[in-house]
Image 1 (cartoon, one colour):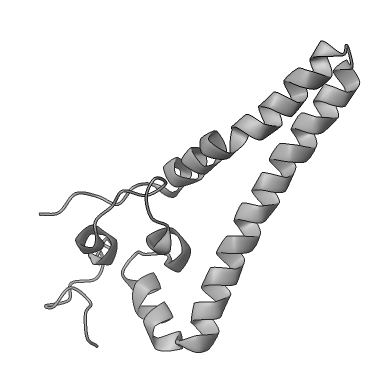
Image 2: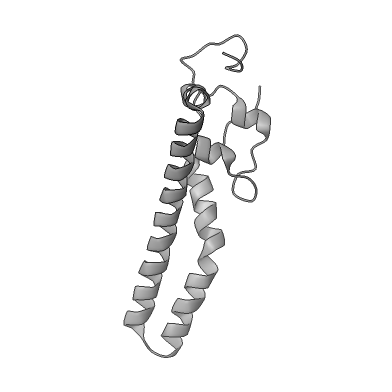
Length: 117
């Protein structure tokens, strides 16, 4: 049996951790010049931008696949996957290809694991 997929919140958390240093550094510089309000604005703006970017990329990836290859999109969703999270690679998602394509939907019992039909 293959291991479980990495939860989506873990992948998103890794993204925020890896993308945080520029925003934290900018806020720290604002605090050094004694601008608490500016530091707060920088932090809120930076992390808000990261969240909007992440959401846009997920929407773009899922919508693109749904338009370009609706059959594959339906198979991925039916078997518990997500086109965006399954396409994100290391260092955000270390799942192997086998784990990403496995059937994680317990309500579906398909003889070939969802591959093919």
